[in-house]
Each structure stands twice: as structure tokens, then as C-alpha cells.
Image 1: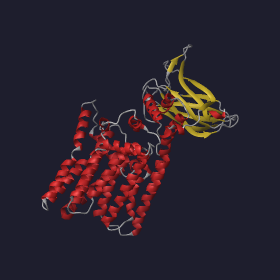
Image 2: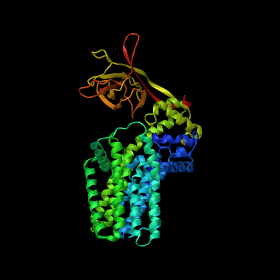
Image 3: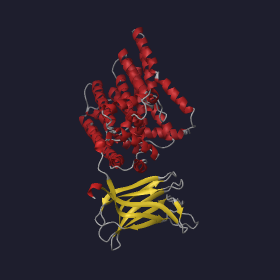
Image 4: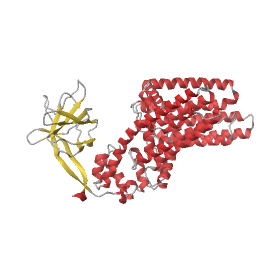
Amino acid sequence: MAGSTLAYAYRYAFTSPWADEMRWVGVITGAEPLTAAWIFQSYNQHCFPVVKLVYLATGWAGNFDFRGPAFLNVILLAAVALAMMLVAARIRGQASVLDALIPIALLHWGHYMNLIWGDQLLYVLPTVLACILLLLISRNRPQASVAGAGAASLCAMAAALCGGPGVFYLPAAWLWLVYAGVRRWRDGRGAAIAILSLAAFTLLPLALWLRTLSVVASGAETTRPGVGVMLRGTLEFLSMSPGKFGGELYPASGLVVVAILAIAARVLYVVWRRQPQERLRAAGFGLFLCGAVSMALGIGITRGAIGCLWPRYIILGSPLILCLYLIGVSYGPEIRRPGIRWACAVALIVIACLYNVKGLRHTIDLQWNVQRMEDAVAEGLPIEAVAARNCEDMQDPPKEALAGHLEMLRAAGLGPYRAAHRRAPARDVVVAPMLFLKTPRTPSGGDALSDRDQLVQPFVAVPGLPLYRIDVETYCRDRSPAQVRWAVDEVDPNGRRRTRAQGDLASVARPDPRYISLVFEPFSVGPGSRLELRIRADGGANTRPQVPLYAIQSDRGEQTGVLGFLFYERQPASTH
């Protein structure tokens, strides 16, 4: 798993900053100073100084090949998986093929955003620190040592300084250290006082978080979701914790996780009552589960209201699943039949392969967006044009922000923007002229397009020349939520029609100009055939949505939509 995932990250990791990672560009390029205020600055209600320092150190060590933090994500996850497998074998007394669950849970490609995007140190680093805390708790000792308590305290504090995902484990670690200190009081007050002092020291990051919460509370008013929405978001996150298939089986998979949590809580209570020598570890497992569940509730509160749980959240549920597994290894019944163990291991490997296939498909789409932007910059296109065409795909709107970031990267010569990596200038070879589509008028005189109508625009393509891309400039006039679908049909000389490509433009929800690129697999047109571009607004049976065309009044009083299509292929200028 470690070898294949490292190879996967080497091939597909982003070579440019993407989306939220753009916030690092100013400091990386030296355009902004690196100050303590920047390190402790909150972003999206998160304060993560440790992540910032680790990210910058990794980038500087690799001369800001932006794949470096992604490689670090893989290495950290692989290292903690190996350590957890060794601990599971030590608890059990021997290794087992069932331990394949550990590397599969942490390294499958369903975590594709965490494995190819360096910015996801924000999620990977607190997850790794939480797993280390879990390993320290699982040590089979009736009493905690001062060294072990110190390591647990450092892990909890570092996790809390890695952003929101890590702060939920801080109260759990503090309670466990207090309990460990009280248990040591009878054996020696010196060690007990040291552990209790470490417990008090662990709470220091809370001062930073209280300051962050006060700033949020004094800012804009936020909408609080209802209890039902919160519980739904929490259950959805618990469904995702076993992996992507778990999310697809919502809510059944979430209810299964809740049932397993209830069983684990019952087992830990019985162990704590009947096995005094195991009370410290059982209490630690229980408190760790409380921290993981509190994080699920926090995500349910913050993300449940907007119904947006990205695949990158799956990694945050991994500590919960691994804690349940270690509880099973420590106190569960042993599976004595080798056939059952091997059947479970094979099932896990099959699931991991399916996760890898799904993750790879999403990875190729994301990497294509980054690669297209890099190629446009390398070909010498104006930065403003590149930003206008890619700000939505790069999730760095408005276009002025992306243009500024690209200028910083090019001026600093970082990553793929070094002069040595630039290609020869290129030019657009026009295959068909620009098309301007006329918007049909409705009985009311407006320029609406109902879901029963469609625009059909024939155009000519050069026979034998592969058509692979349509660039569409659209200007959204209103906030209509129309879903606009498109299709390219080939009509042969006998009138037979065949759809060669199709998709949808966008769900229009804002009036800002945006640039959309319709991309499909290359195809060639046969002699005598013609192509037709069909655009249809699909807004439901009882709606009349507006087509996302900005209607203008021509000299003749016609309503004309400014929707331009330019069919072209890019060729090196040196060949002309």
C-alpha cells in the first residue's frame, strides 16, 4: 500500500497550488512577509500554526516542488500504519492478516484529495497525531509513565494546533492524563504530580482557540442548523468513516457504525469493572472514542447545514475506525479459523482495489484542471486570460486573485513556472468560426428558454480533424438555477444522427461572468457529415428557467445571446 500510494502521488500530485493552497503563495514567493501574526492567523475559523510551519519547511526543503507536502502526507500515513500494525501484533501476541485493515484504511486512493493535494496536511497531520495518541493509550501498562504521559500531552497539543480536526481530541487527552495522574498517586506522589502538571500544560492551546472563537462570535451572524440537520450531518460523516462505499450506503452504514460504537462502549465498561489492571487503557480507549464522536458532531453542526461533506473528510474518520479495531484486538473474541481470517483479508483487499479505481477517476479530472492551467502559462498566454479561464476550476475566484497568485509564482520562478519549463509560444488554429446564438422569444416577450425548448446551432467541421474542445464564454444575467445541458450530434449525409458528446454547462447561481470549457474525448467527422450543437435548459416540469445568456438589444430590436463558440486546436507557433 505504501509503495503503490507513493507511486500514485508521484504521478498525480498537484505540481501547482490549488484552491485553498493558494493562500500560501504570498509567503512562499516572498511577496508577503513571514511573521508570527501570519503563522497564528485564523483562516475559515481554523488556526493551524503547526501545519503552516510543516508545510513551509517541506516546501523549502524541496525547492517548492509543490508535490513535496503530498509526499509527506503519504509518508506520515504509511509510518503510522506500520506502527499501528506492530502494536496490534504486540497486543495480540502475533501478527494477523486481519491487520491489513490498518494500511488499507489509511492509504487507499479513496483519500485521493489527501494524497495528491499538499494543502491537506491540514487534515492528515492531526489525523496522524491522533493515531499516535491512540498508540500511546493502547500500551498495555496498568500505570502510565511520566515519559508516556509527556508524549501523549505533546501529541494532543500538536493536534490541537493543527486546526479544527485535532482540537476535539484535546479534552479526551486531558481527562485521560488526569485519570492517569490520580491512579499514580498511590504509588508515588512525585510521578503523579508530574503527570497532573502535564495534564494542565495540555490545555494551553485552548487559550488560542478561545481567542479564535471570540473573533468568530464578534463577526458576522451565522446560521445555526436544527437538531435534525445536525444529526443527519453527523450520521453522514460516520457513514463515510469506513470509506467511500460507506458514504454511498448512507444511512445504513452510519447506523452500523453507531451500533458498533455502542457495543464497544459496553465492552469497555465491562473491562473497566472486571479487570482493574486494564482500567487505564480501557478508559483511554473510551475517551478517545468520545473525542472522535465529538468531532463527528462538530462536522455535523458546521457542514450538516450546507449538506457538503467532501471525500477528503474520510481521512478524519480513520482514527475512529482504527480505535474500534484495536478495541476488538484487545478485548474481542479471537477468530481461530484461518479460512475466515483470510476471507476477511481478501474482502478488504478487493474493497481497497475498488476504492483505488474510484479515486483514480476523480484524480485524473482534478489533475487535468491543474495541468491545463500550467500549459497555458507555459505557452505564454496572458496571465489575465489564463486566470479568467481557470479561476473556477482552480477554485480561486475572483479571476483577479488567481492572476495575482500566478504572477507571484512566475516572478519567483517556482515549480512549473520556472523559465526552463516554459514551452514555445503557441497559436490558436481556427477550425470553425465564432458562433453567436439567437435567443428565442417567449410569448411574454422575454428571452426565457423553457425546459421544453432548445437551441440548435449547426456548424461545419473540417473532415478528419479531431474535435476535442469547445470553449464557451457565458455571461449570467440573473440568479436563475437553470441546469443547462449540451450535446454535440453528428448528422451523416443520409440524415442519421449520432450523439458524439454531451454534458451540462453549469448550475447558474450567480451573475458574475464565468468561462466554461466543454471537454470531451477527441472524435473525427466523416466526409459529408455536419455537426449540431444543442443547448437545452432543464429546470423541472413546472419552471421556465432563464438560459444563462446575457441578452442584449441589437439595432434591429432582436434579442441576441452573447454565447460564443470557438472550435480550435492548439499548435506550436514554430510549425507555421
